[in-house]
Amino acid sequence: MATSDVQICSNALLLLGAQTINDFDEEADRALIVSNLWPNARDAVLRSHPWNCAKERVLLAPDASPPAFGFSYQFALPGDCLRVLALGEEGESFRFRVARRRILMDESECRLEYIFRNEDVTTWDSLLVTAMEAYMAMVAAYPITKSATTRDAMKDLYAFQLRQARTVDALEEPTEDVGDTPFLAVRR
Image: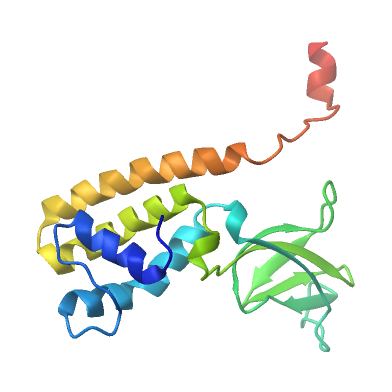
């Protein structure tokens, strides 16, 4: 399994038939390409699914100034927040909006579950790592190989790897109880 972002990018280069790298600072075009693509690619893949290895929970305090209208409180999102997953305790629901990296709501405290920018790839699931390698190969394919065919092949590989990684990641979550609803009561 990859132990660093450089190794993930190097493996992506291998998928493209290119020479590997040992460092982002190498004097090679391929190192410059993958080092430029890496941060946005990592964030895009982490944001795309509620990965278990990238979930965080925090309790936020409201900002000193309330929003101009519509809600009573606003809360600044953590700097490493890539995606809001849930607010409050399980089963609670709130009226809220996310705008300009702030959560607007009428509650005076905000219990936030979110996807954070997990830069420590050693904590990632191995299937997420292989999906990330395929994604990096996909986004680097045309700049490295100048081949749309190779890019399309890497796109297909990424789609396959992503499906597999998402499925296994989701299976590690407990199933949600549907509970008693009018629909279920009628079916009985």
